Image (tube, rainbow, N blue to C red):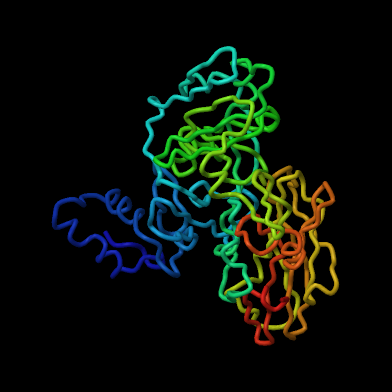
Length: 421
C-alpha cells in the first residue's frame, strides 16, 4: 500500500523507507509501516499533520535544532566546562548544561554505599547513609552556583581578547532548583558543642576537596543537596550529595560530600591556602572571600552576533548577587557616560540569577554597551578600574566588574573591555 497523494511523504521516500525491511520479512502490515515511518528523522518541509510522530520514550530529548553545548576547557582531571549562557531561557540551567569544575575528575559513587560522617565538636558523632538523610524534612531552593574564577582568565592589561562569547566569559555560572535537607537540621541532630565556630567539609573525589566553612553559614541557609531540578543530583554536580552554600563561591560548595568535622577554627586546607585566596595590592590577601558580589552580563547582543541593521533592539542579560536580591540593573549604550534602568523579569529571587531587558534604538554608529547590577545591600557592580584600585591586578578570583560589548558601525559585536581602558 502506498501513501495517499498530498500526505507529506512522497512515494519515493515511502519506497526508500520500506524497501529492504520488506525483503527481510520485517514489514508485513500497514501498522508496521506506520511504526517505521513514525520513527524517522525530521524531514524539511514535511506536513506533520499527515505523518505520525515519534512514539513515547523512556527519556525525553531536545529537538535536533536545540542542542546547546557546554564549552570544555581541556580533557583533564582538573578541568572545567562552561554553561552556554547566551542560549538559555529563563533562570534555570538544565542539569546537563550546568557548568563543571573538577580537581580530580568525577568519581563513580554508588549511592547505597555512600556515607557521610559528622563528627568533631558534637555530642553524638554520626554516620549518615543516603537513606538516613532522606528521612529528614526536604527543602527546595533556587540558587546560583558560580566559580570564584569565573571570567578571571580574560582580564589583564597584557591580553584583552575581542572574540569572547558570554559562555567563554562567564559560563562558570549556573542556577538550579536544589533539593535536600538543611544542614542546620543535621547539626542539631548531632548536637554542636559550645565553642564551635567552624566546620570542615570534605569531598569523596580523588582530590579530597576540602574547605573550611563558618558555623554561622552552616546554621543559616546551607543545604545537603541530593536533588537538582527535579531529579537526583548528577555525578558531575556531586552525586549522591553535595554541600550547597547559597551565594558563596563555588569551590566551598563541596561535592561528593563524605565528611563534616565541627571545629573551633578554620582547618587551613590546601584549597584555601595555595588557591582561592585573593592577593591585594598592598601585599595582604583576602583569604576567606566567600561571598560572590553583585554581577551582570549582557547576553544579547554579544559576540559573535552581527546586528543586521540600525533600529530597535532588545538588550538582554543576567544579573546575580550572593548578598540577596538584585534590585536594579542599569544599561549604558554610550561607553558608560549615561545610564538608564533596565526592566527586571520576575521571578526576582534571593541568591539566584535574574533576567533583565532594555529596548534600545541603535543609530548605526560605533559604540560600547555595558550593564551594572545593584543589590539589596546597595552594592554597585564596579568598573574594572574601581576593582583594580580596591584589589589590585594580581588575582584571577572574584572578577565581578562591568562587562562591555563593542558594536561596530558594521554591526559586528565583539568583547569590548579593552575599549574602556
